[in-house]
Length: 331
Image 1 (spheres, rainbow, N blue to C red):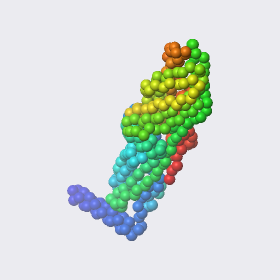
Image 2 (image 1 turned 90 degrees about the horizontal axis):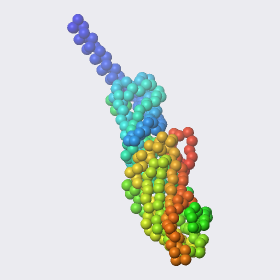
Image 3 (image 1 turned 135 degrees about the vertical axis):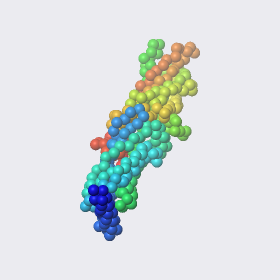
Image 4 (image 1 turned 120 degrees about the vertical axis):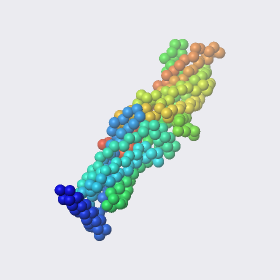
């Protein structure tokens, strides 16, 4: 029995060696082809406060009449946004059938990378290049790596809707003074020159007109920035202004997005099918000066100053519809 068993193992080993040799010869003679990646489709899966799952379908074509089940087929996968590595994955031991097949796997995006990506998105004119690299190594028999690459372009215009020259009244709804207390004639906004990885300043200007026969002093301008109800910035400026009677004046305020809060916002963006409502709420504190007598300071929650816009993205180009301020193009 021992001799028979050893003999059987010997013949089995010889058979495997001959089979591998025949396959290698067939490959060298051009009878076997190298498997390749023919397409990739991504979508966001589960998301929590720290991680975002990316679900991937990798389309693979095996031109050979036999499946590859040698256990050492490997896929390396990387998702980058403006050259910021957002997610990386590796899957080994894949078995490829003949013809076309789809490999399914998951990678995890670290939400802490969102502020780094946001910085590049803003400083590059609100443009993001999403680059997806997939490398398939088809086992020791072929010893080759097939690289597949695809990209999407994301464009947004977050501040574009802030610019306006529409005249709007500003009411105080306060005693001792009739409405409107001011008129808002023009608004404008742009990103500050000192955008960093930790904060995004937005320079806002408001041209107002004082219709009263007496001046106002403006002591403070405050703001609150929310993205899907997540507070991403709040503060006020103590720069003072004097609004002369029946005269236009330009008020300036720097609002700041705290980039450290953007990973929390990102969770809501993904959960809401990559749609965000951004709102900036303003208030001003004014003090009328009537006949040389200063009236009590009035805080005005200036609805006419407030700004709301919709941000929509399609990071992987797999959403059923596009809309809002975000557009994409892919290749």
